[in-house]
Image (cartoon, rainbow, N blue to C red; front, side):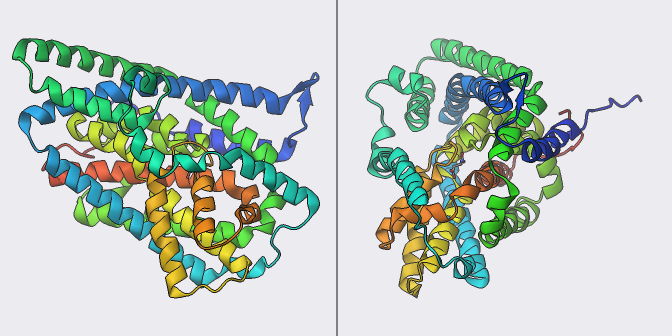
Length: 428
Ligand code: ASP
């Protein structure tokens, strides 16, 4: 029988490699016919990001409503929720401990004994601190408050993920408790919205290589190799820890607990992983994550609709790891005593604050400042690694998305779902 020939993911990977070379080579000030290339890539990249973000609210709400309406009828909400939170908590803790291990062994801060001191350096940092300082209050208490929005339309229009998820959960659950006739009509309607939004996501994915190219080129136009050199040890520590978590711990769970092929899972999630890498935003990647987990990995809508949107909002394993390594690095650089209790506080705070980290670029910086305050270090400390934050953000966002997808597969396997990762012959 004739076997359908599928496209391979090369265009996106080639786009990333070309973007790294091109961006580093031309630098920020390059122009063509007097037009700034940086501004051009910025505009095109923003249009691509907007297109992805555009899908998030209708896709997430319809996905949760249809999934939960089904769970409400069949039961098992508490069991699924319990498994999901156990996964989020334990994997974030493992991620942090892996980070802690590498930062203690490599000790990157020892080579960076000069905290920022020059005038311009301090000025830049003060501006940065001010720009993100006002968001600090939004991490802990306000996260709790934002779970229950007072105005659902406002939550939808501002894309407030936790409020949107809460309302959709409540709405979907309530559908399962009303009369069969109207319940079916509503379920069919939201199922239709969901399928349509997945279709819209597929259309946007047609320009994925171009969008990825613009976003990555823009990053590399401003992040030169020289900025990497100054914080090379820190960068290596973060990358090693993230890779150990993703390729070691997560792959172990997939292989020995979920009993699926980690390589297949990587292939199934490839479009979402490259999107996370180039956008540095797990929220913007959400439509593609849902598409990959359901359509390529084969997880049911019932599980995917619960695990992926919630995971995108609160399960930030990569960010938690980064927060721990960054706080430890600054503490090492400032030469403070890293006793067991200080390290314990850093681990604990990284675990707690990562829940409040938003799925947007550089969101971890706010959490790191909070940790620095708790251990008595100045917020200026983030200036030690700010030059490489965006690059590392690309990597930790990829890990955040990957961890959510592993959770979906694990929960689905524990619920005895069949048909998960049975093929790796995907279109891309
Ligand atoms: N950019 C990350 C994300 O979207 C959050 C962070 O760590 O800054 O998942």
